[in-house]
Length: 437
Length: 110
Image (cartoon, rainbow over all chains, first blue to last red; front, side, top):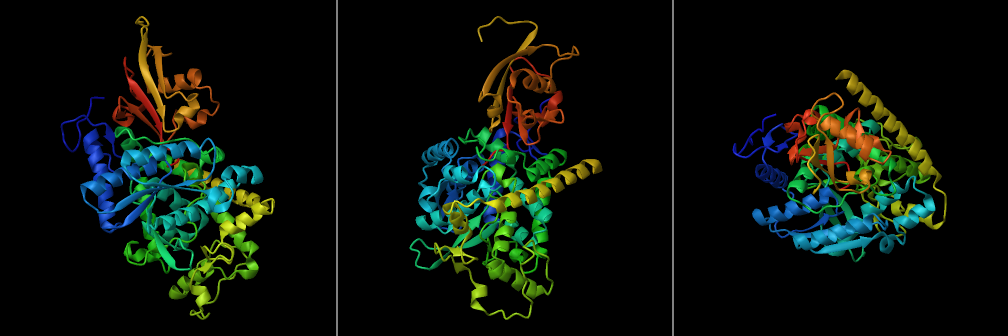
């Protein structure tokens, strides 16, 4: 094949084939286009405010490393006037996280950003190594995910930061859209497709004053392929290994489906993201009508994505939902959790109840139920740790209680079976897709 | 690299990153010599190289993490002398002396 010239400068030899539009670009044109598109996402969604302090959820992996590098570049180039801080969570996995944290420490020096590392051991009294020792490898991702969710919020509160950006990319969002479709979970679809979510969280002093921690995904429209190519062509220092506790999840079915679709039709990834956004707008009560950028950002709920921040965990987001189902079934007697209320008020608005993926024992309140009950309107505080929670006891504390009691987590097993069903459905879809193609 | 030039082989550099190196005994960079003709007497191409890597280099039994359906697994990028292999004819690209072939996985955590 003769070398093709760059579609933009027409001079240099093209090295990159862009997945979104098949354009062929040279290295300098690719790097500047990549940055310009993220700048466009940031400005068109009004993600940042001048003077804002922003924590970058940093794992040392490719996505957060590229995010940190690009945000530093753009903040200087376009004078956003924001202060960037790296926030890392140390799950306490020897041979995995300790290595990737070394990468984050190098990044902090390379980008001249302050770094805060918060460990599960100081937050929960358990490292993931200890959790796995107790519960075994199966299902441990659920613990990790529940713990991490709070950990990022707590880390942000500790830093006095009200905005956390994460490296979720277009492939991640497309994968989550598919997982939610396969689970029939449209309310969650709205939360996960939104570029901005907010998690009500306690302030650092724990005095009960609520601070709204905003989450956003500046790489939401960025292809994973281009993130890897950007890191490669800019020689960025990132860490890539599998979490030692989830080798099975590497074959994540939704992820494999996305990658197979990309090979056949690269634009499919952004198309799935946009379809997810459009479907989310149809969900009653969703905030997506305004594109997720209006003042009242979509509440993130207690967890928005899969159990784990790494690719392997993201690929099996289903276990989080099945876990949640199990938790709600366990607590059927006091099924007055926030999620029911939020959902019921949404239903009430449109008079169109949706079948939800909650336990059978869970009752969806009738539309006639009085709406003004304060307990049903606001997040409560976890009675154990004081952290904001939809339940009386937050999920982290429920899990911790089990750990501390040395109780075998039999419901994880059930969750695993359900997840396998989801995987089976994906496999079937893949085959259908191949058949149709 | 001081070995005598062999008319019947092609010397190339193969690199693995993004986590793929784990499948190749944590070797990030290999200097390989491959025959100048493949089993059918054709110039060796990327498809040949991938078979060669699987059959003779890769000790890890999890071949499916590198190759699926006789081609590089979706989600693994192939760069030929830094250019996307899709610009070079994908696995039909005929390997030349001194080529640098990089396999980089996009499937790992971020």
